[in-house]
Image (cartoon, rainbow, N blue to C red):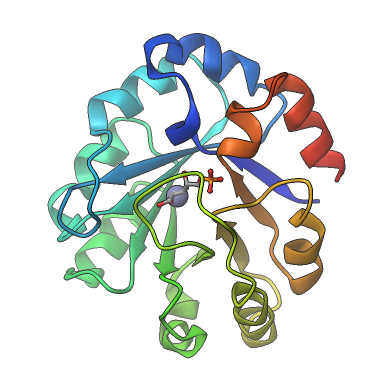
Length: 209
Ligand code: DX5
Ligand code: ZN
């Protein structure tokens, strides 16, 4: 069974509560936190996570595209994050982050950008719950899926049969099967869910794919 994680980056922020209700048939809510340093865009902070938490029982899947995530991990956990994913490429105190997430009883992920090799994840696998493969350059929604990410997903699945593998960027009805066949089991979808004419139907058909 796959987990569908609609990315609220593509939602209408002025009606976030309604948008969150529409994705009730999904599994996770993907929240893209960007700091304007690690990526050239700025999005949400922990207060938005807290607001979203109030209006949903879905798992909050927080993707931190920020430098020095150890400075913010505690506040995101306190705000209701259930999964915290940090980037391999950022400056960070991984031990601190690992201990913070584990002692809160939450899940930890590491993400790799399109140009980063899958092999870098190997040494982290015993410590993490999820590997996030970026299938676009992080920073913006609505970009085109990079097919090279398929091989990367396959490589990680060979390294670890059980770990969650999330794929993020440019996923929709036309390519969801290819990433799931490669071994991904957590699927992020921003534009293909929130920009659809019928958001509820989009969730339903991506879940069935
Ligand atoms: C990009 C973000 C993605 C993005 C996906 O930096 O990490 O989560 O919201 O959006 P779509 O599905 O539109 O590519
Ligand atoms: Zn993301």
